[in-house]
Length: 239
Image 1 (cartoon, helix red, strand yellow):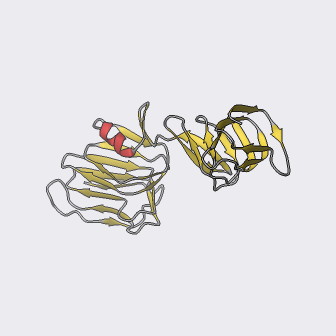
Image 2 (tube, helix red, strand yellow):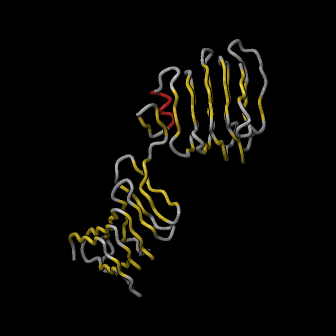
Image 3 (cartoon, helix red, strand yellow):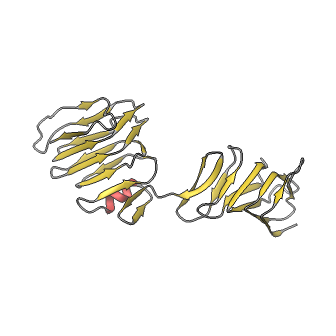
């Protein structure tokens, strides 16, 4: 009726339910490296939830759609191969759940890195960066940021939705290897900076295509750069 149950290295193929839980009492069912046809919840109490915790690599053909069933990935690297559409979470520190290749996966949620230090947002990495350092993206991100110091943002081929705004008369910034996509404005905008270098970036499916370079450090207009920067086309530099 309540308590904890562990199923490890179990393979059950049943027509009705491989595991059928009656929620008389609150319980946690841990499933590790197992393959089950159906997880079912027989609702007997409308206030009590059963938590299914998945460790290792697991496959479930059908997850109960009951609102009293909670699905949790235990740690980074845990996977649950199951149909898309369920609510699957993780309590693992600095992790998030993604659905790809037919499975829910607990993965590292850090999106940027400087040296050996990782950050949860690009803005956090920019705030921590020392002049001249390189920030490398670790994942596709959606974020608008402002850069007011000299540094390099290396997208490492990741997708970026948002705007990078560069400011500061002494600031020299390089943006490279970024795939800008689905933006609502320019991918990169600048105002009164020392220099901006864009290398090996693409801009696609955005409301405004390309890069807007407004003024140099002296306030002189130096024009806009609008359109596609094709991958591998070399460097685009504004001074």
